[in-house]
Length: 208
Image 1 (cartoon, rainbow, N blue to C red):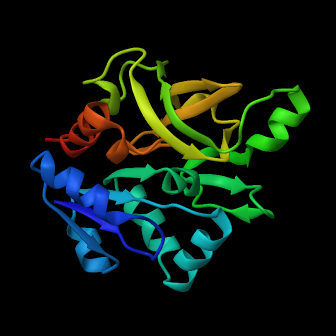
Image 2: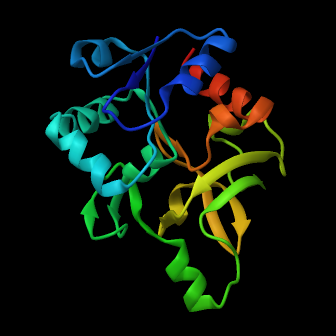
C-alpha cells in the first residue's frame, strides 16, 4: 500500500487518480499507524517551503517522517515535497528541512540574476531529463531525454552525490534525487503523461 502524507499542502486528487490508473492502491492520511504500516510513502506539496515545514511541525510529523525514512521505507517526495527532503531552504527566509537529502534549496531568480540568464521564473512546462545515474529505480522504465512537467521557482543545490537526473533551464535543475531509500522528483510525475506514470509505477514496485 502507498500512503500519501496529508498535511494540507498539495493537490492530491491528480496524484491519487494517477496511482489508481496504474493499478496501485493508495490512501491519503496523516495517521501514524497507517504510515507505519505502509510499504511506500509519498510526500507531495505545492506552495512555499516555510509554510509547508510549519504545517508539518504543527502536526508533529517532522520527527515521524524522519523515523519512517530511517526505517528503510520507500519514500518519495514530489515537487515541494522533494524540496522538503533537503537540509535547508532559502525560500523567503531561512528554514530547516527534513534533512533526508544533503543540500539546500535556492532561488532560481537569484541564480539567473548572478549569471545573466534571461529566462522566465517560475519554470512552467515540459523539459527533458538528462539521466546521470542508471541504478535508481525511478528511471528504470524511462529513456534519456524523456520530457516531464515542472512548476517551480526554487531548486536544489549542493546535492551532487544525490543527483539521478537533471533538466537544463539556464542552470542544471535537479529533476530526480536519491539517497538510499529516499527519492524525490522536482517535476510532477502525476502531470507528466506516460513518462510520469512509468515513474510512479517504478516507485510502487520498488522492493517487490
